Amino acid sequence: MVRISDETRRNNETAIRQVMERLLAGDVPSGGKCDIKTLATQAGVARTGFYPKKNRDGSPRPGPYQHLAEEFERRLTELRETGVIPDPRAAQIERLKEQVSGLKERLAARDAQVDGLTDFRERALSQIAAQRMEIERLRDVLAAPSNVRALPNSSKASAPYGSCS
Image (cartoon, rainbow, N blue to C red; front, side, top):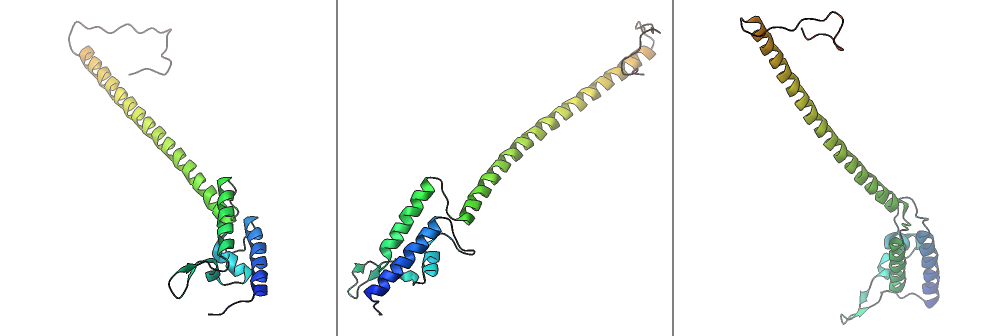
């Protein structure tokens, strides 16, 4: 196990804090995220230093930069709770999720509208078919010998949409 000097640890902590500020400000490198892995990579330190260790006897001890990882996660959580998402990729994902949700609602409304129009069309066609059958029945009654007589045609009046004959 290699021990680092106090000066190296201070320099690493300074580098980590600088990178932490950049990441939390939204300056996330391409291909990276606003997370511990990117923090460690950008600061040039091993990621394992951010996590707890075990002594030889099995008792836990904090990693050399664990307090910085906890501070980073705490500040990241605070930003997210206020609605700020420092990671542009995560912000894009959230924006796209909201957009998909809106589109699903619009699609459901459109489907309901199409269903309503389909029902209306079926009712209209059914009514037209019933009216046609009634017209044919009345023509048959008129053509057969019975006491039903046709109304006289008026030469002055015209049907607004043409005759039914």
